[in-house]
Amino acid sequence: MAKQLVADLYGCGAIIDDPGKIQEAAHTAINYVGAEIVEECIHEFEPIGVTYFAVITTSHFSVHTWPEFGYAAIDIFSCSDTVVDGIAEKLKELFGAEQIKTKVIERDISAGDKSAS
Image (cartoon, rainbow, N blue to C red; front, side):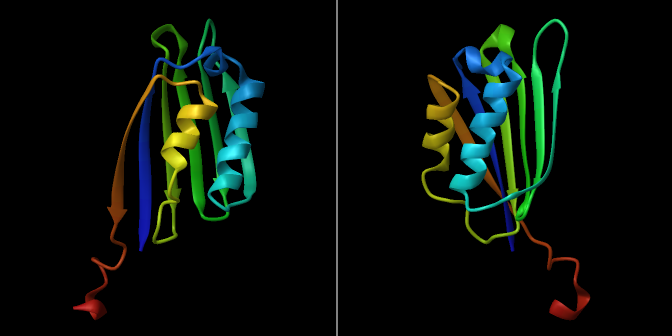
């Protein structure tokens, strides 16, 4: 009923320490998955690192960065049954990553429903 895409991006470009560029990339990715932003928050850590979080019409989108390692962790949780094809390559492109590893977690919200048995 819902899916969560977890993406680990390695060898990212300078974007991962720039809150404005992360927000712009997030907007592009959110649009790519066909969602709209309900509310968003961005925080720049000292001395480096950024966290971006958006509540979107299909659930949420988040980015956490570790610029000292060239690493970004991205999470897209969607109440849609599908995770949009090509989003992993789109994220790799947007964040200038050399490598991306993803996994999709299927969230079974009906498993606790006793009437479904």
